[in-house]
Length: 225
Image (cartoon, rainbow, N blue to C red):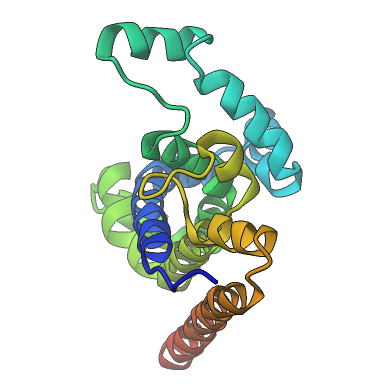
């Protein structure tokens, strides 16, 4: 029987925190652009960024593994110029996590922005505010529930990742062995007792995350009403 090890959870939470911050930074301008555009290419972009939701994690993980390996142009360039390996490293699973969790951040933000009344945007522009200031001071303060949902769901989804992380990062102690992979290995070793402990922690975490989302959104709606 293995002893309980907190390291996989700490690694999972670290990965989820960095992924969430990066995706929020990249998703806000894209969500804003998609919410405002009427371009014919909009459905194509939306379908493209939403593919991780429907693609099997092993398929996405396989192509990310090929793309990030030192045999690909990108991987070869990073290896030769910066001596940076992206396969079986924390940086590699961070990139994979960002790709896999992207729609979970983007979609709530885009949905929230599309529901902001047009009159607020028109008033902001009429007062001479730029699109950036309108986004920063008008849009974002009015979509707090969407931001909360995107941030929490993205964090929780990243914590629970398995297939993509395993394909790109494998299972390296202290580097890529996150909680979900640790559970898989414990089951392979027939250490069901420790696997139960790890699994119950993730179940409790997932339930707590959903409770926070629902409670805070309910409070926000009550205050807004």
